[in-house]
Picture 1: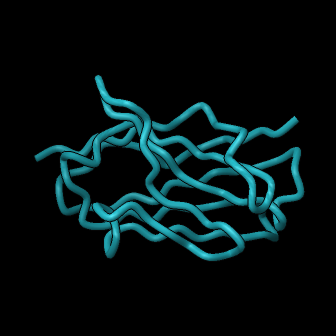
Picture 2: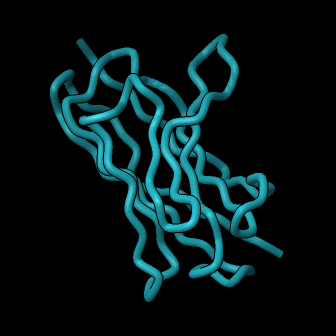
Length: 116
């Protein structure tokens, strides 16, 4: 059974930074695609960033500000978020999937609040 545990959320002022972490277990991490999604109040969950076939990709609104990375030795994926904006406020979820397949497992989420 895949387990994903996020950490690192919190309250930060606009322009600040946070680093989210997601510890994964239950699947061969080095052969997993990993991603980050977010859901703001009253909105649907949206894709933020992912690594598929070890290639990172991002939604347009976070390009140049967010960086996704992974440490296969620690079974952990990170999301470094810089130059945060109030519109980045959301619950952030880690996601996992078999390499080349859809994401099929989700963490419990970590709250990020960016104050103006």
